[in-house]
Length: 169
Ligand code: UDP
Ligand code: MG
Figure 1 (cartoon, rainbow, N blue to C red):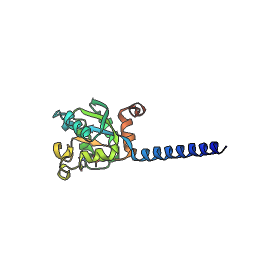
Figure 2 (figure 1 turned 90 degrees about the vertical axis):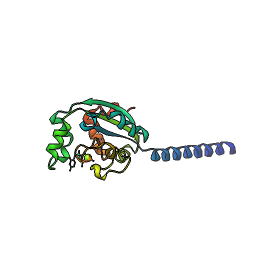
Figure 3 (figure 1 turned 180 degrees about the horizontal axis):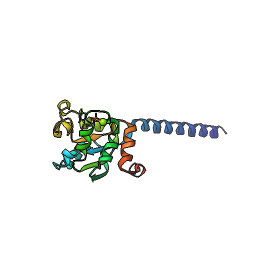
Figure 4 (figure 1 turned 30 degrees about the vertical axis):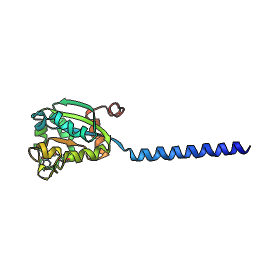
């Protein structure tokens, strides 16, 4: 009798500890997906492999990637949040001026991590060792795009890919 009670308590303790370990692992392991675009200035200089090395060096995996030419409508819709900004027209023209490589990156804290790897929007302000410091030609021709929040990552991945398919990997 005593033994049975002891065993039951032991089983509950083990289940409790396992659950606590699983929960804390989940919290530490913030696996995310983010959308990256290698922009026309970079594809024109064949920089895709060099840029991908920046991601893999920091433990981001490219789980989906395709090259395409954006239509004017696609570029306008993709950057719709900027539609009232003075640079919007030029940005749309630039983004449709040559091929882009759209890609989905996966990794721990992928959204923030990719923004760090990219560097500041204006290459003049980009830190040493970032993609934009290394490759960007100007504020507009700044080589890469990266989602800036979980919400925009979901919207932007779905803009080019089947979200459920790429996030299964
Ligand atoms: N851009 C520009 N002029 C500006 C600000 C932005 O041409 O004054 C372009 C640039 O290519 C930038 C994109 O518009 O990457 C989107 O701007 P955003 O502020 O979202 O910067 P990002 O998120 O790309 O760093
Ligand atoms: Mg942005």
